[in-house]
Image (cartoon, rainbow, N blue to C red; front, side, top):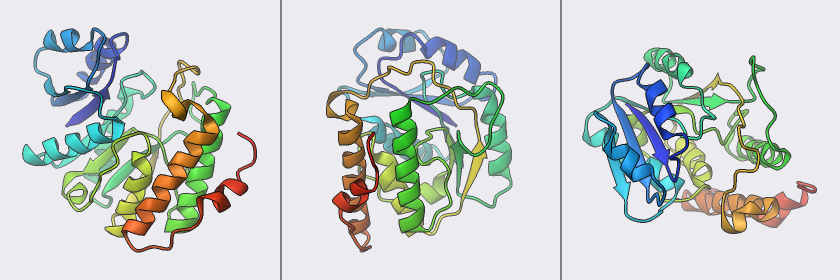
Length: 245
């Protein structure tokens, strides 16, 4: 099944769903409390599975609910992608092929694993923060990631049921990777295009400040490590080596 978290994506929704339909029959939209035309557009889309949050709960909660839905409906794998046209649906068959190999629990898209035709430039603060977090995760958890924040992934659902995920917001990937390592899951990356259609897209609130966003991510990582009994390094120590964002 394909799961697409959505929050006020009326300008992209129909094009994304139409393109995804070329590659999958089972599509789940998690509408995270949209206040634009998204709910009405979803009502007009036949054959789409839907979860509707009455209020905005966060990106992480949308994924947590998608995992639970996939498990309840006995899907073996769930592929997630965003609805802002920054993930290329034509790569869905590649995720399916990688999942079919059967030797990984998470197939994680990476925009930095290799240069692909048509790649664009990421906003400097996002590239820098992704690089810092990826380096910290690799160092602390023994991972070998090149892109820790890409939402284009394939997840083995039986493996996801072994995780204890509670982070609702954009810092979800920090807890996710800690839990993946704790559960002993196997991870493989798959190169996907680097597409930024709107470099001015906002996170909202304090997270629009790169420095505060990085600090928040590191705080969540520190808390997640503490939850599994790992040493909890000082966020200040990590920030000290990050330089200016």
